[in-house]
Image 1 (tube, helix red, strand yellow):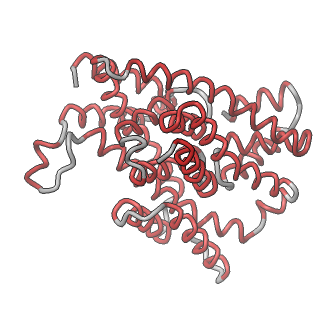
Image 2 (image 1 turned 60 degrees about the vertical axis):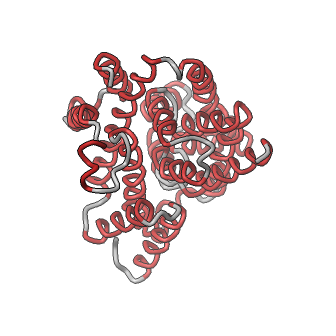
Length: 194
Length: 155
């Protein structure tokens, strides 16, 4: 694929993401795992998980951080511009339209029923993306048979995973910025050479 | 993001009231795209119509765009270092745990009734097992919610 075609495809993929990712930055993740499957030459799941982690540790909206990082990885600085522009373009247009009849939009009962259907489904989509990310982090290779499971699972990784998960679920600790968990986990991995 | 917006936009600049910001935030969640960006577009439009919306959007995007670009460039030159590779193994584990943590929080809030559990599970299966694009799930679930509202049932 020529460079120009790559940028054009990136624009299209991110335009779709901007149009259909409802519920904030994390909601773009299912579209990114899909992008990784559709364009294996762009980035691997491991690279995507790295990009998500860096984006979570950096200030600013998660969705924009991820689009910039993904765009740069695929097509350098022009790629970053294209993907971030494509991500925000649909929402800017939609917000401009809604602004004209703002108060009526939220109270409209059809809008409310559409979103009552979307919320649980988007939660399921994010769960599916989370599963893809977790698979990459915890398995050395993905088991295809039951007998493969013991050798494929990275036991120390699983322990570290549950420590972070449980700590983050406990009330006062859940307020700690993600960067603290990410840096602590990085330090543990360097020390234990995971 | 919300506390920062409240301080800058409501307290300092007085561009919007506390209530308006909360409204924008709520609508920002119910429109596609990044919530912080949507909220800023609303505030910009309220102040100076379309040009205001464009500049407010550019303003909220630019800092993270530059920061991430710098990190991405640095990242490239350090990616092959052994320690960096170990560190990123741990970073991926933490990222996975934090995302699952967010999913659990979202589920507690949005997935309670039998209908909601069914929608959530179906969405998961369509994407994770059957390998369809999330676009179809978003369109389908929106239509389903709309139809359920039409016949007077809440999802």
